[in-house]
Image 1 (cartoon, rainbow, N blue to C red):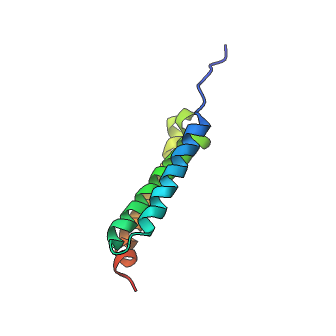
Image 2: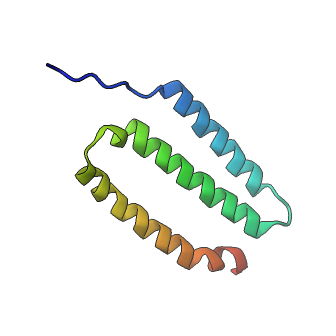
Length: 92
């Protein structure tokens, strides 16, 4: 007996991706709040990566081993982002 799983609603995910892109573009146009703009841009990038990973790569429907394998690079990216954040905000 085959198990049917619901597929994500791709148009809804696409709309969220467009909204997050618009938020990142609006944050980049902020004239003086560079630290806040960088934080918003990184936050929207993380949200978009989660949406893509969970819906388009179907990680939501995978087992725990595949999710753990996909989590390691994400943790690595978070550590690098935290380490480089001061350079992005206070750099030249």
